[in-house]
Image (cartoon, rainbow, N blue to C red):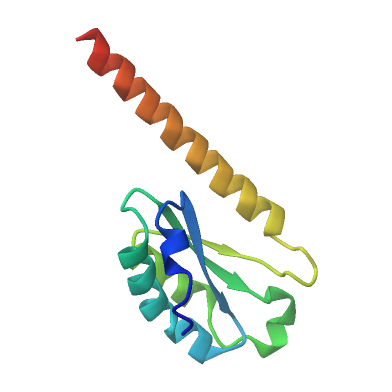
Length: 117
């Protein structure tokens, strides 16, 4: 695990913990990556789990259901993508952007309500 530049993550609004669906070790390392992320970013950051290389279905070593359970256990959304074919990539970024916009709107609404009272 590379430990450099984690200070840059501190103010991140969103983090994608990504693994290779064709590599079980890649998936099992998500636990340690998630611990590192949780120590390195503000607690308000959106964290999502992303399984990549879904275009290589015949080589898949991590079932979608297993990854979904892991994500649910850690209160994350799960997405699947293929960087090679672009499957799911746009949807992933749209979902992250939408979640961040909704979070910002909720914070603005809370601030307005607090000022009004």
